[in-house]
Length: 456
Ligand SMILES: *Cc1c(COP(=O)(O)O)cnc(C)c1O
Image 1 (cartoon, rainbow, N blue to C red):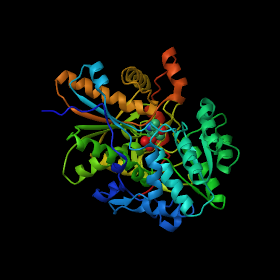
Image 2 (cartoon, helix red, strand yellow):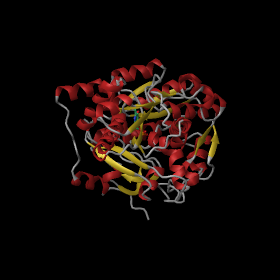
Image 3 (cartoon, protein in one colour):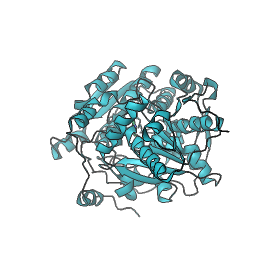
Image 4 (cartoon, rainbow, N blue to C red):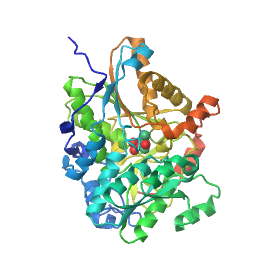
């Protein structure tokens, strides 16, 4: 007999994982190494120490250690807002009239409103431990900047945030949350850095991009003593920290003997998805189990589905190491769509390799269909989802509707990465019918991809 599954599967505090899981340890084809843009050689740890904290560099380059202890101070912080619930979407299932069983892992239950706090607290901890004064970063929609400013205020670190200009202007409340936690926030491109001034000269009136804000933040970190740069997605270390999402999800599912058929997550730089799928992908890589794993990206910034797998610059200013990834080209500036957290031109090297090796699938969805799903979800499940998260909702709903046609009772797990309270302008556009589905042409993508560095 099927055990009745509660609406929320909560774990208790002692069930929070005490180690992160490093998916790379189980990959036969390891993600390609970061390259020095000058020499084309793999970056050595010492070369990265000027940009990133030492312990984080070690995590970044560690392809072999499967489990890494979570330091006690980070675990203490996690206990303020974790474990996060795994929710059975009974009301959504009913609204869709589907035999599918839908679960979502909800990461929006903290003030920053997203999963990003899981990595920001780790990165701030290692910066503090190294005796640094502060960190610099970029933020798109503002979730990462918010998460980092919370983490920095907790550890008494200074925090300088470069915020993509379009978001800085559209989301004044985000900005003020960051300043409440003590961060300084600068719209990017700015005239405070060489690279910012150069980009402003070349593209006056640009609304900015993550790639550009990264360049500015790196420039300030490497030219200010006692500062390092931290990044909220894409990097291996961030996926490592985010594995807490997947490990908790797996523990909760195992409690009730639930085996998912598919796992769905939105993918900007790939950190929430990489974290959510980590233990499941581990089983898949070791041949112990099989799952369909689906990355969802916006049709306006389709790195997996329309990008190229190649070495590229991580930032517009070309100051960062080269990473091999699915990319639209570092000069790609997506239309100002409303999922700021999904506007990055590239993708995690780990997920890129797994995708290239066919361990996972990817789909892209236009934003009006995303908001349609967001609104349905809000009305039946109560949570007001972030536009980014709603990409996963869209595809979870689509898959559940397929089950309705075929009569299959598949089990779907998706990542609900955050809440959308700061995205009400986007909801307003959707409600007023002024939202557009911008999809780049092949020529636009080709133009941007043609500027990839020539490597190998
Ligand atoms: C940043 C963000 C994302 C996308 O980032 P990933 O690194 O791909 O996870 C998704 N959802 C929310 C709510 C975010 O803030």
